Amino acid sequence: MAAVDGEKKPVLEMVQADGTDEGCVTFVLHEEDHTLGNSLRYMVMKNLDVDFCGYSITHPSESKINFRIQTRDGVPAIEPLRKGLNDLTDVCQHVLKTFEKRVSEFRSQQGETMD
Amino acid sequence: MAATMSNVDEIRNRVILGEFGIKNVHTTDYPGNYPGYDDTWTLQKFQKTFRIDVVQMDETLMEFDMVGIDAAIANAFRRILLAEVPTMAVEKVFIYNNTSIIQDEILAHRLGLIPIKADPRLFEYRNAGDEEGTEIDTIQLQLKIKCTRNPRATKESADPHELYHNHMVYSKEMKWVPIGNQADVFADAKIGPVHGDILLAQLRPGQELDIVMHCVKGIGQDHAKFSPVATASYRLLPEITLLETVEGEKAERLKRCFSPGVIELENHGGKVVAKVVNSRLDTCSREVLRHDDLKHAVKLARVRDHFIFSVESTGILPPDVLVTEAIKVLMTKCRRFLNELDSTEME
Image (cartoon, chains in turn orange, yellow):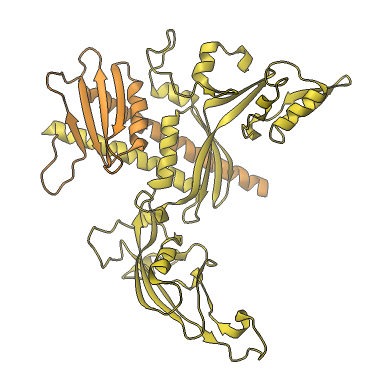
């Protein structure tokens, strides 16, 4: 998970404090802010396995966020993160589909009133 | 409707506008918070309650309702519209000659802010350190103009419009110079400034501008000139409920407390009675709470999951395209981290 040295910039890091299990992990999401942080936090908090989820922006001049997940019953924290990202993708897909459908309906409706 | 709503439902679904503050601001419907409620997220539940209604739409402005989604996600769309949907804008300005009174750096800044009509989806980002640019990542524009005296002007004229030629430089003078195969690929795209009537500089006889510009793809996070929207915002749907009948002079006063069209007066057997007609129009000024005899007769609230979006494009892309692009950007962000998770698991 650690950053590849040299050329490639890190995308995601996992930080685990000593003596804790894999259910309590801080993920460092690079090049992200409230946009993904808050929406992903919402989706992860909707998960029953999650005991705590929160994020913070480390410093205004650093473009990364610390995204903390603590789970119940020793579920690895990576699981709710993955589910959160998948759920958020599903939300976007449905919003996109609905939006495009409604826009084309609006267009055809307007075409009718103009005729 | 709100009167029949249980107290818990009100906390979950309404933001209350009170006299001294706003109640129930935060989303609280997480699993485990409310006994008897199933707050886990499933796609089926979301698809059932989610809806979008387009209210108005033209080439530059769009208003639509997004209902059944949390503020965290609606706000992500708004933030992406402002700062992360790419456009093309002037990034490098090569000034070969500028004898006008406007300084080079000011002129360069002004040129950067002009919206350039070109579909950013057909271009790539320029690589860091690349000064030249190629046909896939650069649009070249030229501004070459010289001010001269009008020989046909009348002697006693003091009007610069009559005395000089080209003394006002407008954005329409920025001419597209195709690079490589661009002339064929973008033959009917009409690349150039969105608006031709933006004043760039004023000249006097003998002064001239000779400038070449490179437009590149970028996002609003880097510089506001890349932002594709004039503004993108949302507000929550206001909900006004009358808790008791308001009659006579009080009804007149109640009507005047809200935006026009929110409250209308009805005649009930000689008595004038106030009625909420369209609470959507309200600006939520809370003026009514300043009237001691009226403030207990109304309940002011906003619907937590009903977002009235307004997207105003700069004219580069139509607003509905901007919204679809914004949704795709959020999906790309998720994809980026899912790929990272998958690739590290392989190792």
